[in-house]
Structure formats: C-alpha cells, structure tokens
Length: 77
Length: 381
Image (cartoon, rainbow over all chains, first blue to last red; front, side):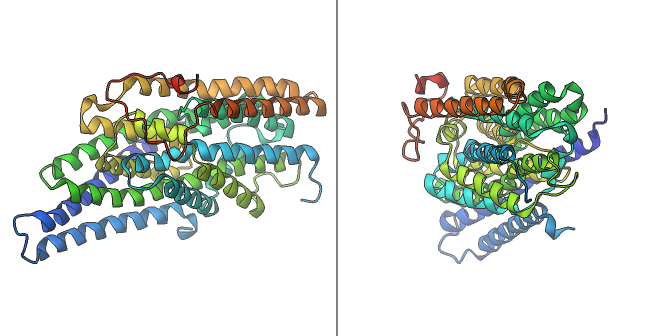
C-alpha cells in the first residue's frame, strides 16, 4: 500500500502555518483598529494605527484571494 | 443520453436526494460558528452558504473523478448496487441528523457504496487500499491537524488582543467570520457536490451511457449543485446547534480562528485530491478553538458522542447498504421494496423530528453552562 506521508506532512505544516498566520495578522489589524478608537492617542488622527490596520487587512485579503485561486481549478490549469 | 432506463432515473433521483441530505447535514460546517457568535443571522447564514455551495459545485470536478474511478471497481457496480449504497447513506444521514450528530456525509456515502458493492459484486470489487489511503487516513489526520491549527490560532488571538477594548475586537472578528465562513461554504461546494456528481457519473458509466473515465456532464453538475445548495439552505438546525453551541462555547475570535483553520486544511488537502470530510475538519477546528481559549471549555461528553458517531458511520452505512444490495440485486421488485423501505424510514425520521423541532428561531436558545451534561437524545424523546 502506498501512503504519501510527505504529502500528509506538507498538508499539516502548510495548513497550520497559514491558519495561524492569517489569524495573527488579522488579530493585529483588529488590535490596531481598536487602539485607534480607544487607545491612549485617541483624539490624534491615529494615522499610524490606521496604516497598520490597513496593511494587516490587505495581507489577509491577499491570502483569501489566493484561497479562491486554489479553489477554482480553471485559474491554474 | 437517449436511453436512460427507469432504474437509472431512480438512481439519479436517489443520488440527488442524498445530495440534499448532504447539504443540510453539513450547513453546520460552514455556518455553525458564525450563527453561534451572532456574526450572521441564521437565515442569512444558510442563504449565503446555499448559494456558495451551488457556485462551488461549478468550480471544480476533481474529486468527482477520484470517486468514480478509485474506491470501487467501476465495471462491477450496477445501478441496483449503487442505489442500495445510496439508500444506506441517506438513512444513516437522516438518523444522525435526528440525533443532531455532525457525522461525515462522505463516510456515509462511501460506507453505503462499499457495503453494497461488497454484497452485490463481491469483495474484490472494493479497493481497500484506496479506502485506507484516500478516506480513512485523511479522516484521522485532518481533524487533528485542524484542531492543532485552531488551538494555536485561538490562543494567539486571545494573547494578542486581551488588553484591547473588547467591543471593537469582537466586532472586528465577527466581520472576519463572515468571510472565513463563506470560504468554507465555497470549499464545501467544490468538495461535497462532487461526490454526488461522482456517483451519478459512475451510474452512467456502468450502463454505458458514458465512456469509462468520463468527466461529469453539465446537467449532472447543475443538478448536484442545486440539490446540495437547496439542502444547505434548508439548514440542518439540529446539527448547527450541536456544532455551534454544545461542543464548546464559541466567541467571535474562536469562531474566526476555527473557520480560518478549517479553510486552510480543506484547501491544502483538496490539492492532493483527498475526498476530505469537511465535518471532521470543522469539528476538529471547533474543538481546538475551545482548547485554545481555556482547557476546560470543551464538553467532552458531546465530543465523545461525536467521535463514536464518526467511528460508526462507515460500517453502519455499509451494513445498511449491504442489506439493501442483497435485496435490490434480485430485480425490479427488490429495488421497489428497498425504495419503499427507504421512503418509510425518511418519513418516520421526519415525523420524529417534528416532536421537538429545531429551527432558525431557537437554534441558539440552548446555551448550557459549561460542564452541564445533556444526552443528545433528550431533545427527541
């Protein structure tokens, strides 16, 4: 019987890495947004926090788009 | 396509009926956590999920080809045998739905087919190596991987955000959840609708209507997508309740972490052509997200019942499929008898479910304190 342990290991490493990565990046984005609303520099324009949040969400969006790319075989013949 | 016999037509309708049960059995996979955390209203959630399942069915047919040429010997499976296998799968799906148990629809289908082929065409028609490497191994590995991913992700999400104001954080994660849940639905459509396509294609190949190794024709893809989409929209509220509220208490960050983990596992393994059970993956993620927040948050009695249902699914569906095949291969009368028995079973399950209905309105009314035990049968008897 042939079991592709390498493939299985690859799935494990990739999925754990991606899942943890996305959640951490998204959490940082949420955190930045919440600092902007309620943090110590409230009243300022909070532009650093906003930029950070936007960067985080942009990274998440890119990963989601890559996920859709993976779901649709027509996109990668 | 000109000469479809009545039997083939019956098989196709039965396959679509299975696809419908597959849909409402698995709505929970994508939407249970979003409904539980309030990220999406129940009716909205099932609508999004239903539509994305339909869309997903059109996007990929890779797994459909794996099934019709891998698990059982295509040339030995007659329509009567496939019919018997589907009956086994449908009855097991209905029974577990009645109990609110999120068991794997894929395993029910494979179990039913294996049992029916075994009895109807002999043990050599079942490819056990394929069964182990393509079904059993992913079934054991995928929930563990998803669970570890969700546990780590949940732990880090709480670790990073614990000092921030909870209002904006919760609302942020809820928005994230709507996207992650949608991705799970889409991936589910590409995975599960294909199983029915695979079965219908297998039937058409077995009667010579299609050449061996053919891809599913367009009408098969459309019908399978519609059946699973409608099933998903019907909403398996009993299973949503178990997955979203009973296994563990889910807050928005956990829901997001669980869904992100499920999506990552489903997508990375779909590339290898595994006929993955989304149910197993999602249950693993939900459990992991409970562990990641605080170790005591998981109701192990519910998890135990689920694990038992998983173990039983393949052999139980196989047993029903085997009995059905023994009768159905005897001829038209046999098929009619099995059809009537299956219909009676479905009606009986539906009647039992009406005694204590679970709907979009009361799906979240069941928040038990952690540690409380309630037998899953309690809602039914």
